[in-house]
Image (cartoon, rainbow, N blue to C red; front, side):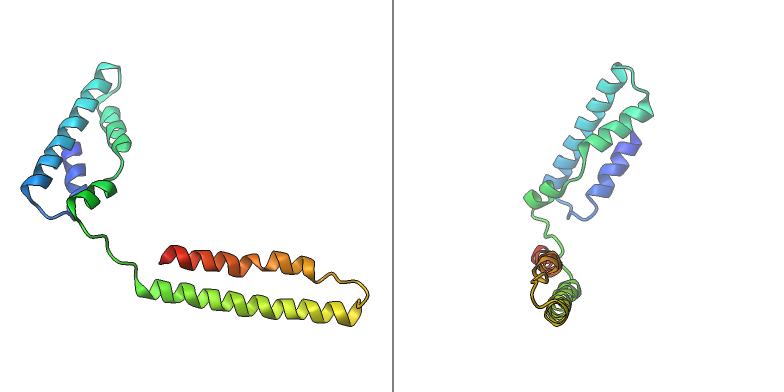
Length: 136
């Protein structure tokens, strides 16, 4: 069951060591070992049982929050790049819409059709806006 211990040690490497974290770590290892034993009793091979127990355990993001580990802040360059992409999307879509308006009124002034591609084109800056909001 060394594979389980190594996996849990790898998950807990960012968490500062304390009595509480060691107790939680030991409890998780014990639970995973019990799960492996249960799976082996039900016909799984040892390696398959260990892998299945590890996969079903998942990650420890919620546990990190409970133990008070601060999550790394989002890189400011990524936020700046996302904002730049939003500005580019706004300017680019405005230019393309202006081009559609020009083409529409120059070649077919009696039929207003520029509105239809405009609706499709507005998804570009809208999607970039929500991308920027998600990065914050």
